[in-house]
Length: 220
Ligand SMILES: [Zn+2]
Ligand SMILES: [Zn+2]
Image 1: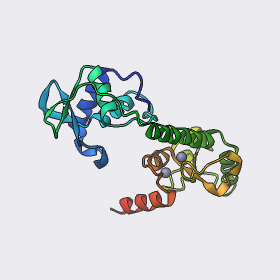
Image 2: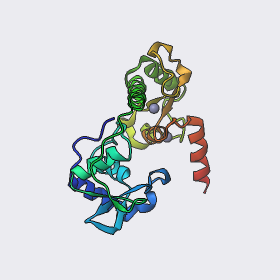
Image 3: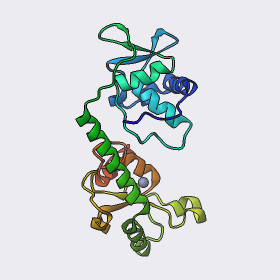
Image 4: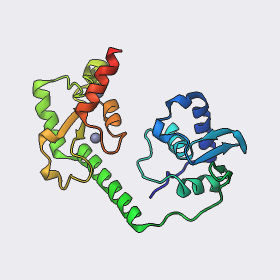
């Protein structure tokens, strides 16, 4: 399991500032549970530890941290070593450095998930099938509209957006064996926003499902 590298205490403080202003935007499943991260030892200001780390990483970088790390001890140790205080809500005490759960089966599983995720991304970016899918699509839709939301880069950005679209592999993680088993129908062509949204959930959200979501929100 890999913690985000290069995250400084200052960035963690910025993530807390962000949360102070955008608390409602924290996804429900990433809000405070067992442990809280305190600010200036002040129990009035509490933050969800794992979310803070991910936020700290992504605030100043172009993309989020793709690695997988667990909440609990791994996350707490990371923060404590950087000088922060973590509070155990049930036991009502400060958390100290603890051994990380070394359950090999769990680590193997997470490592495998990460490897599969990397393979997924690699095929999307460099695979020949995505390239081919794009070429075929260009013939029927030269503006390359997003399969999910209908956005077109060339219509919105002009020349610089011509022939740009991202390929998304629809087969769930773990089922992709080799690129040569990929078929054109396994590829969705999507804009960068929709692509990020598709990858936000695990298991991957289906392109069709996201399309319905976008439609229902647009009508409101
Ligand atoms: Zn889109
Ligand atoms: Zn994708």
